[in-house]
Length: 159
Image (cartoon, helix red, strand yellow):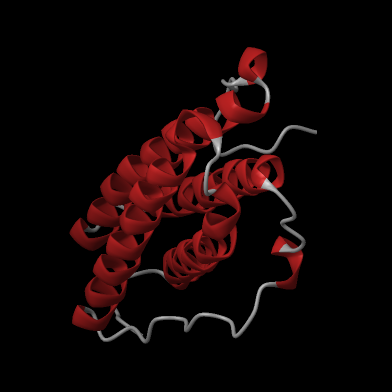
């Protein structure tokens, strides 16, 4: 592990990477259910999948550059099943994006407690990733429940 980062920051960063791994898997799972779905959902799913793959790759590379071994993806994600139709696929996409936003928010909070340049860079990346996931989640929620597309505090679970 890198001496430049607090273990809590590394753990939160690994959690964010794990959320990205799950998102990549989820889009592979839900994509086939969106064929013919209204409103260009399949095209949007491909865009989201590409974004998560790019984020995953960039984060793995950033970790490796700091001698941090990136958490590998799980073999399967049973909590993502079943995805029976386009509506379930859109709900899953919104949930996965919300999960990513929450993971990036956790990294932001962990990194904000430290002033080292590496922690500051992680915080800045986390803020960008949180914002992007929150926007994607809002876009997916409009397919599910248009009147409830936005949430007050993205990355924070309601409850």
